[in-house]
Amino acid sequence: MFKKVMSLLDKITQGSSSQKEEDFSLEKHEIEFILLLIKESTFKGEYIETLYNIAYKLQQQYLKK
Image (cartoon, rainbow, N blue to C red; front, top):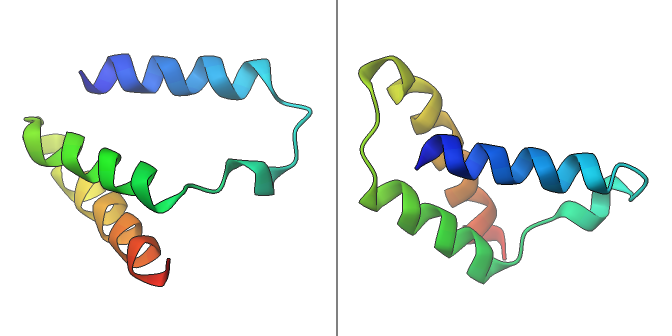
């Protein structure tokens, strides 16, 4: 599932490289969805620290919105 999400993100960013960075800010419901996907998924041990850091950043952004 992780590879599938990353592949979709790559397609999105490649197809719209001319857009401004600010167009990529996430809405509150989008952050909720990503955090739910993380919660319901399993990851290899080698990715746990990176995943933790990403989830933490997403939670901080979620709390700001």
